Amino acid sequence: MKNSATGTIARSAGTVSFAVFLSRILGLIREQVFAVLFGAGFAYDAYVVAFRIPNLLRDLFAEGALSAAFVTVFTDYRTNKGEAETWRLANNVIMAVVVMVGLITLLGIIFSGPIVSLMAPDFSLVPGKHALTTLMTSIMFPFLLMVSLAAVAMGILNSFGKFFIPSLASSFFNLGSIVTGVAFSFLFSLLGQQPIIGMAVGTLIGGILQFTIQLPELKRQGYRFAFQFDLKDTGLRRVMHLMLPAIIGLSATQVNLFINTFFASSCAEGSISWLNYAFRLIMFPIGVVGVSLSVATLPVVSVHASRGDISQLRDAYVSSTVLSFLLTIPSSLGLVFLARPVVELIFEHGRFTALDTLHTSQALALYSIGLFAYASLKITVPIFYALNKTRYPVIGSFLTVLFNIIFVLVTIGRLQHRAIALSTSISVIANFLFLSIALYREIHGYAIRYMLLSLIKITVVSVAMGVGSLWSYTVMGQMMGAGLPAKIFSLFAAMGGAILFYFAVISVMGIKEINYLFSRIVARFRLRNL
Image (tube, rainbow, N blue to C red; front, side, top):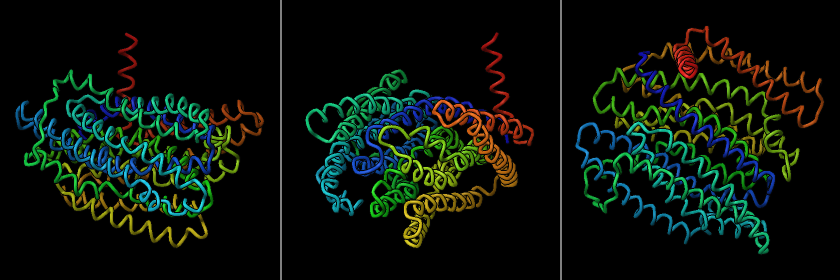
């Protein structure tokens, strides 16, 4: 791997990772608030489905297809066209988002009832559950417009090499939804309404903050709003042309979530909650590693693709994917072995019971199997858009969805909600393997032997780390007792020891990316101590 590719991506990913880490911490606090106040059941099931509807569209249109397509075209304009044309494209895309996503939002509010019936048909069997879900869906649908605008702003800033503020924006979403959500929950409770409706209001306010916090940095980069809406514009048409297959290509996980919600609504009450709490925990390492590397990689590979520099693109892909393996595989196996103590420590408070911990930890362990593939897909899929080779993500998505439906239908009667988590992991691994092979063919090879050897080394060390972490947690738990302080100490000590063991062993395995990261950390430490 060339150090230039590794260095550029690692530096940018490090900046993004810090911001995303902060956001994920706040996201976990947000989920803890839900667990304490509402537990797993009627109210939280309704909220999860209500938020999943605009959130699914967000991941498809905003932070998925729109972001990938816009960054590709915007970067090309910055590289090959003048400043005036670049800003004209930005304004045209923003106005198109306001008009088109605004229309989708309006239709979503009007038809929220039928949409809920489609997504969770069994909710109508529980008195009041369908009505509550419908109300919260209509409240949260405008969130889609806010985060779509936030995605455009993020794309512009990322193209200018500004990663921290856009990545920090989601922290303001979590902070806003926690503070205002809890405040409105108490207000609705005093008014005799379902308190969880207040959390829906807080979610919308959080979305507004996520967009507006980026506006000052946009202005500093030279952006000025001007009314520009021309559907015949070449740049806008390019963005829309890339978006259509991108919507399908990036949709596998979200469409599977839709399908899984449909199946989970027929399982025991609380199943949707258990799966959602588990998936939120999985999203922590995916966000810190996968999203960070994806955000850092996309502008790099877009520039290489626009210049026709396939050699540099190969280096960027291999480096970012190996970095993803280095950080997600140990996280995955750590969560498999320590699923129950992690869920117990984070969520088992207030209305969240020991039974909820059991079911959530089972889902977490099964979701964790596919963690490395989730994160790596965040890197792999956008590269196809940068290359204008969109058919492979489309094919992969269809195959993934088909496999998921068949697997869940066959196993849900016996495994219940666990079937959904296991199917999701197997499906996403299959999708990653398919796209990796397709990319290998499209760019006429990359350092696949190096990637496979790195994968084997990382997996072996991670398994040893996972076994050791569970053993040390069990031994310390027996020595220190069952109190909360003892559990906290035992878990963090086990995790800390596991992390030290992993990095100590992996650093001598000849994987260049980890050695480069260590050198960067040492260099920064020395600079701070001069």
